[in-house]
Image 1 (spheres, rainbow, N blue to C red):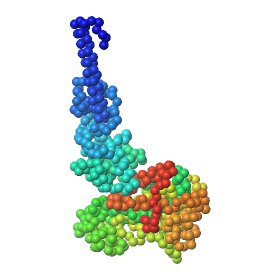
Image 2 (tube, rainbow, N blue to C red; image 1 turned 90 degrees about the horizontal axis):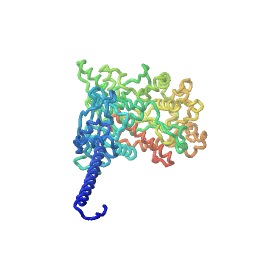
Image 3 (cartoon, rainbow, N blue to C red; image 1 turned 45 degrees about the vertical axis):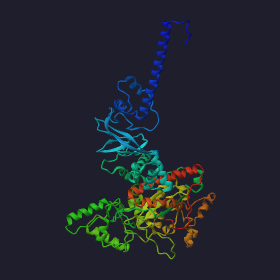
Length: 615
């Protein structure tokens, strides 16, 4: 401030007025800064995609920004949205996807947001189009009566229920702990609640389970390009997608990019096949003949592979058939509940349905008699041939499959190798396990369920489908360089079907016969015959590929089973559809982890196999 030349009343008044103006400017600037800060915070909490009228309404209600303050409201549209946790979960669109009309508010409710920071209360909005009758929730849109689908844009949260939203980072942590530490849904729920949540806000196991399935179903649908899949409004929720995911899984191998570390193990030159018996699921007890494309198929178990209704002995198809018989026959009703049906068949158990007191043939005979009594269609339900290979493989190769399986009876032989294929069968209610194909680098290529036993017919059918997918499109000159390792290969080669395959001109038959066959290094010591020790010895692989001697890994299947088998306590209690989906997603994650380790030249944790009793 300039020095007064001399004292005067007029000069003093001017000085006071100037100071007041400066002070008012400072107050105005301070108020504007506070206002801008408040608006920025509001914009940080309200999704910018919401219609302007709805955004203004929320600003008035929650953040003390008045509609009359037009300058502030105009500034709202010009400010960038800051990053951070949103206090409002809303659809990512403000206009209808079909008609481009502005959306209006449908519902608003408080939700619990579950994240790595614990549980917080947030606000969730759903919008609707008055013209198209489309509903837009946080993660999906559609007409509830017709079905809902995911947005093309992936959201940061998982909408578990109307009142619960999970952070995807938390779901990712849950998946990683399950994949590497075999943590169950209940174990993760208890750990989360104990570490981050007070007792009054605890999240139960079912909610964590549902969140995981929604999270992984969305990731899988986006992976296979089916994010436009519509979930029905019938109450089946994410389970609607299981059938299409399983159908897609059967059509292809699990893909991976080979690195130097992977190739040193023999990847792209060998497939190791084996059966794991620890992982099984319940299936329908009724008989279902193996008929595909109208053609009967021999030497496969005649079981219905559908999962049973909860608490019942049969699947929904056979339960409906039996109930129809009960209504029209006038005879004593045939029960469909599991315990009542076993009692009806006079099947005694020792307190455990998996340990029948009668032999399997007797029990199956009673089930067959019941099916005949009810006049049931023995081709109804789902059979083994379709479950094992999928229509993509069966339909073009039906003549080959029919003739090969018809010859899947073993020749008389003097030398019998020590291979237990599961002759002691449990009650016809649980699958036998899974047939798995693994690359020497540790990547799982394919898996399919086994029924009744690890029979040569199912093993051969599985290997044919794997070879078809693996060598399809490859030049014929490369077929002879592919090796297949299996611990029961000697009995596969002694099938009469092998003679038929050698004579066949079919593409799949020529692929399989040209592939080299060996027994894996872990089980070769159990095989005493000269044929096994000379013709099928794993060292024969080294003669063709001497550069891989000492690095190739034929025991990779059993090593992988040490990891895979630890899911027993998690997946064996699941119904079939969830069992298959859970393993499918865990295998994808395991393969990704394996590829990353190879790419970074890090040793993969492949546990040592201490004995032969690992399957």
